[in-house]
Image 1 (tube, rainbow, N blue to C red):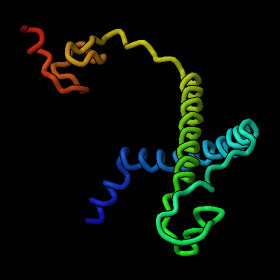
Image 2: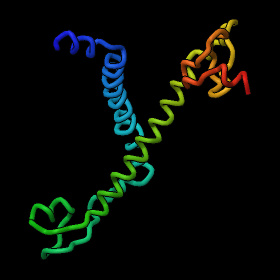
Image 3: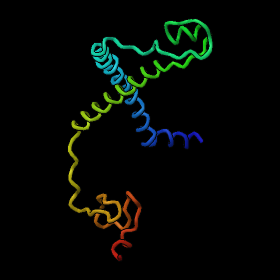
Image 4: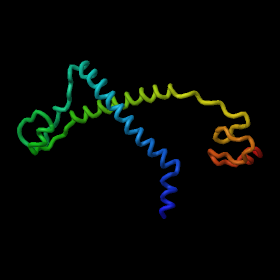
Amino acid sequence: MLKEFREFAIKGNVVDMAVGIILGAAFTAIVQSVVDDVLMPTLGLLTGGLDFSAHYLLLEGEGEYATAAAAREAGATVIAYGELANEAVSFTLVALALFFMVRWINRLRRPDTPPAEKTKPCPFCRSHIDETALRCPQCTSHLEDAAVT
């Protein structure tokens, strides 16, 4: 059982997934910094420091509260639509920052290399495969069936 676990743990897919998760966490920190340190202050400056967190609908409870959080602390039941609006704006900015960062990273990639000389396109999935292959390794189609039709 230990041998089987070791084989599972060192498989390429597991290691690749672990590296992807670690890089994803680091990339999340970068994107969040772009949003918090660049986009949000700029948006706050452009909108005059507009903050929706004080907007809420009081469902149950008495009195007026400065924020939905203060109302909740006092035991009131509220619909905090202002906080939802803030989160929606934050999500939009994160998605926009992520889009531009991924777009920029994709431009830095090396261009695709042309296929090797001794390859042919699979008639089913159009991936490049060895010209002597009888089955496509990508879509697993039988290539001799395609030659007959």
